[in-house]
Image (cartoon, rainbow, N blue to C red; front, side, top):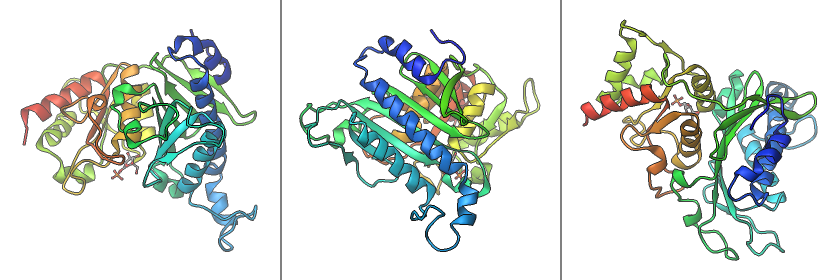
Length: 336
Ligand code: P6P
């Protein structure tokens, strides 16, 4: 049960019992992500100033080494998750290999692993466009008391226990699911609390927004080309509107509220697509399906894909169910 304007903390406590592993650790994990997101939000929202202030050499006004924001975000999330002594391992877009987390007295007793894209779309920072953090949470599959292994991270998306994103936009929002629907919380920066602003978020079954980088059109699979032309035909609800921010979290968030489809297909430049399966596509797919949407690689449900590598990429089509169905129909009828 969700009440608008409930704080995130109140919401977590009220809904903790609905989570089958309600030992409270997952709640503490979500809380630690909430804290890290506030810290990153503070830096993201003054990026321009930092560039100006920090321009005099490689230190900023606080005398700290000036870091690229995605490295900064990565450090903050890893630091916060480590300090809270909740996870046994972390994988990040910014780290080549996974990180084993084990405080001395813990003896590898923590149950969860987190996979994260700490600052997706960070190239947009310089032009003041929204960026986001994406996270995916699993229970470890190897025995407690032993260090995590790659097997704990290479799990299908269908095994996720929670997933979410933070969008650092005109307002900062934390949107997440634990498998019981999707809820959005907006940060009140004046007091540093998140409030339930978007309870029970749902993708409209249909929409009229398509999001794709049409600059790559000539490289797309025939099925995608034909779907884009279908979107542009003047018939019924079409032509649709093309909206592409270049920031997955922002395009996804808008499409979930208004109805729409996001596509990052494979191309000659990106033969497996650009987006990463484990910490971009799987978490967004979990959220999409929990919000009555759909996510596939054009043929296979994203959350059914068996991962083989930590940073593997997959083609990604995600959004309003009927729109994804239509795109998949074009892909099926134009197999190459
Ligand atoms: P392109 C950002 O780098 C990202 O991973 C997504 O957030 C975004 O949708 C996509 O890549 C943009 O990629 O090739 O269109 O610039």
